Length: 473
Ligand code: HEM
Image 1 (cartoon, rainbow, N blue to C red):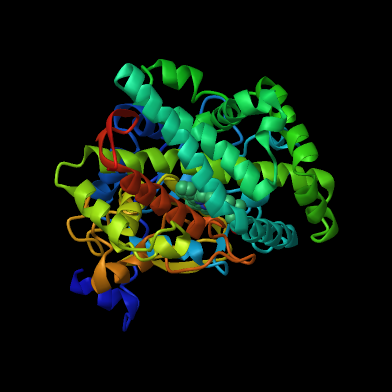
Image 2: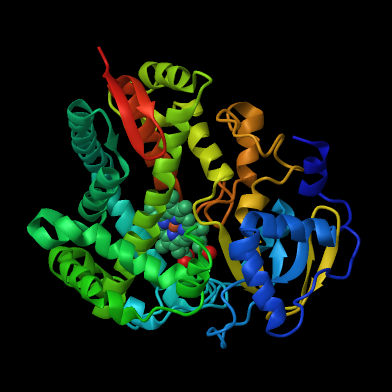
């Protein structure tokens, strides 16, 4: 870690004031040009890197999609924050207003969420946020009793399926079985809902969620299909929610019936209406939780399977020697190298790349080397894939180093690991906006890795496919 870190953690003086560089360009033309660069000509990483070079600053004004032609009511103007110091202002509830900023100034139709502004869209100053997040945290805590055993049951089932397919066909895609079993596991452990009670939900529930999720967020994401088709069909207009309402309503009915006890608790103990409870449960456990895991877990496994430096052997020794016979959260806490692989994957490719908040008041925002006047109401936009490669904090930031977070120096770095809308050393509470599932994510991902390394003497594959499995002797 460079010496600049110690000087930023207790700065004697705020860095010198500088006028905020960058521009939003001409009306219509500026946002449109930025949107084409962002999605097509450059991609988001190059787009922001070029902004840093041009403005000689990690903080600058720019536009982000969606914008022209059909998003007339969306204001694309933002202040980009691309280093760890400026980005950390987003965690300060005194400064950061998170009301309706989950996807920037773009707010998907409430038709996607049963007419409810679900908890990620609520700000800490809204009492409903505290009420619903408290409920969510309680559900998670109660579910933690079943979490580990259900995860193991589903890992057994999933890897037996993959193993059988590899034996029969020579290779197997592991992403779909992983998603199916994560769906079963989260329903059982958190919602107390058994998906086998509904053959339709068991078979198609996960794909209903995927369709709902992608249609809702298409205007804000890149999926790299041929251009200009992506611009025309995915980034020019918002898809109406009626296209996914059938699957959404089936899942809501499923929650109402099979997760009755949890729904009842939301109403009686947390004072929520039935509609508030069920649509928030959907969003918290199917969007935040399941889609988050679906993005992260294949990436961790791909890193492990494609490594050419002997990582599997090193981590296998740790998984087998440490933690005792039963795999639990406490057991994986004794596996620092496996935990570090998970953290480094979250640093290298944060599954939720962009976070936003609106300045609650005029304030002075600092980067490592300058400070800037921000006006009340300005939209702050942090792009984590660059923030997490801040060279002032992370040595050789563009290299994937699976042991980066091991040892005293490595553990120190966790306070700069921001994948969860807060530092890895922080805790989610009902009065902040940090990811409620933060610790469950890293511990469960570590359990998955440890489980595999105990079960197999070697695994060959990549980010989607297994080509050989050598069962432990
Ligand atoms: C790899 C998995 C996950 C990732 C990458 C992730 C990431 C995030 C991020 C970045 C936010 C902040 C969004 C924003 O305000 O801009 C967030 C919020 C949230 N996450 Fe997660 N998350 C994951 C898993 C989970 C799990 C397992 C749960 C629940 C069991 C969960 C529940 C939530 C909730 C409820 C919020 C909203 C918090 C609030 O409004 O105060 N997430 N997550």
